[in-house]
Image (cartoon, rainbow, N blue to C red; front, side, top):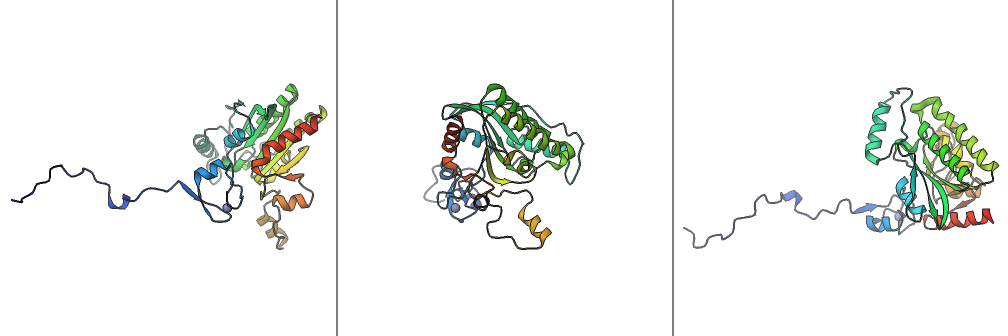
Length: 282
Ligand SMILES: [Zn+2]
């Protein structure tokens, strides 16, 4: 018999050896631009802009609305959802794609619209969600934007639309293309009553959204480094069989060539919009 005896029982269900290190995954992220390792909390506190190189990470629609509005904001048409009018089946079943995105992002389609205050001034904002089927514009996005514009006209208040989109939603065919004309016509009515509309283009804004409301602002402003165009650079290169110039279709290039009015850092965006509205109204 041994001359000592273990007083306490050994720990039951010990942690398996491969899990004995402190878990840090999910706390850090790598900047896509400068490859710096950034603490996620720092990134969030910095409005999802890399503190080292100022690279603008994509921002979800809900975060965007919270960033632009002073505090509480009222959401419009939250329950508007696609009916999948063509019962479309491509590589994936469209109805399944819709359901999966709705569950993952807790929203019915690729845009949020609502009313709140921007530095104390009432405004209507629309923010697109790129993670929802590439921020594509189908009947719901078109209808929500149109209703937001109509509310803006009825209430005589200012309008901001923040785009992040791959364009029209192919799974809704012609119906999605019709949204381009519908939204543009509504913006025409907004123009008639002389209400300003500021379009904010973020990375990426392409296809039918660029071809309609994103480029129809009284002011078209973009975040730094955003990809903005109709067809993507790869498609253009393949079509014209030529190398495109450095920085082609990025905000700074487009500003230089007269397609944009300004490139604004995310931290200054809210004040910029507020000042622009003050200028329009004075
Ligand atoms: Zn960086």
